[in-house]
Image 1 (cartoon, rainbow, N blue to C red):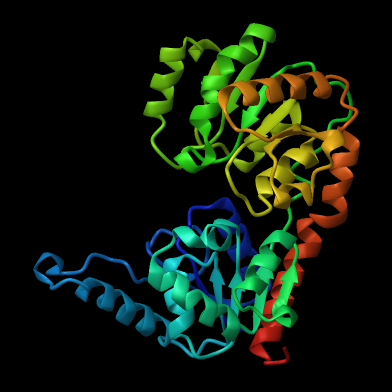
Image 2: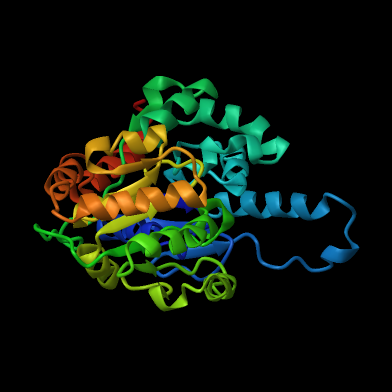
Length: 357
């Protein structure tokens, strides 16, 4: 099957996993994206390369050039299906321009924060979800949001792609190391600043605690400076991007994993933490409650430094005996096993390509 995948996050480990899976299944994959750097054995079409003479163009002309390039990329081959992987503004435009079988993969912010998107994206989204042959949603909350935007319920399948349970190994037993892991992003949205400002209060009650940050999707210098300012640099490790294997080992040794954004889909990082035995300390979000039992996690209702500190300390207390871990792991084994769920995604693509929806 000739598959066009439109997405603008090609450095994401999850993006690469999906592409590698399709290639391994024998599909002919072309990625339509905003960069030529895609670490997978696929053809790449860059629609966002610099536009000559852009400064001299009248207002709006550069946007029209972008649309023209997208259209050319979409019609560069006779694709059997177009998969919009995370429905960003560019993905919405591509779906609107496309006239063949269409699959939309929603990750979270693309629909849960739609009100913050440009007006044209909000306008086109209703038309795009209505025309899609198949839609993949990773949470029931997102599915409800899509239906409210005009998506046909018969086209939507709700499941998370899943995680590699063989890689994210499980260690049964006590968690005495008092390591707290952050594997979400560094952008403002994820509220790392709130977590850092909470850390002095955590240390006041748990002086052996250590905070490990494993991301670098934004500049880390600001966060290192804040840690110095707060006097917590000795207990905070900014390790940057780590390999899949290193992340798995870090989570396996961790006591607590923290995620406190204002909205979310069903983050794979949550499933990775649960599969590894780390106790989740998370924003109190509907989509997260689909995976996490309050008896085996700590929910943060008010996300400020004081409440986050209280939640992390409570998480360290609960994580000590490891009683939560086996049950959290089972949830991921039952609903979030990548070996079972990635083929479901492939079947969506094949179903759309055959027009059997």
